[in-house]
Every structure is written in C-alpha cells, then in structure tokens.
Image 1 (cartoon, rainbow, N blue to C red):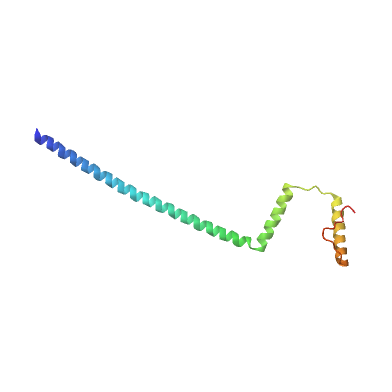
Image 2: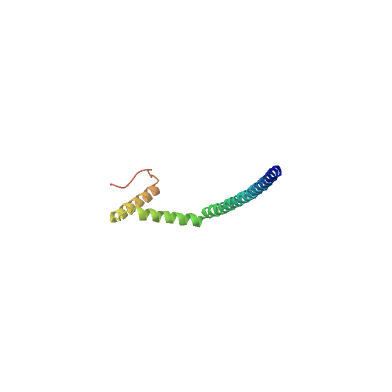
Length: 121
C-alpha cells in the first residue's frame, strides 16, 4: 500500500505544480493586458489634450479678430433685445434728438457740463 500512497502524493504534487504554473501564467497575462489598457488610456488622454489645445488656440485666434468681435457684439445685443424687449415710445426719439442737439450746441460753445441733462426741461 505504501507505493500507492507515494504515487498518489507524487501525482497530487505534480497537479499542484501545474496549477501553480497556470496561475503564474494567468497573472503574467493579466499584468500585460493591464499594462496595455493603461497605455491605451494614456494615449486617449494625450490625444484629447492635443485636441483641446488645438481648439482653444483656434478660438483664441478667432476671438482676437475684429470681425469676430463685431459678430459677437451684434449677437449679444440681439439676444438682449430679444430677452428684454423695450416698448418703443415715439417721445423717446424726441428726447434723444433734443439731447443730441443740446450736446452739440454745448460743445460748440465750449461750456459742456458733464452730467448735465436736457431731460425734464
């Protein structure tokens, strides 16, 4: 009976060795795959950073152009007009017109007073 027991023990040890080798191989494969996933993630982040930089540079260049600034100003004024419509009152034109003529006459005489208004005269 003794040889059978040692034969079984040898077989069990051989099976355990094979299992340990399989576990070690699986761990090595997992480490390689994890490394590859980290590499791909880093590449995606780098590409996104390059894309963001290119877009920001393009926008900043565009914003510095006079035409773009004018377009943005026109758009902003139209948005304010749309959101907060001011009811048109014909007397408004008379007040503005009177104010303009008063400013012009005061400038011609050289006695323009800062803050002086013609409204309510």
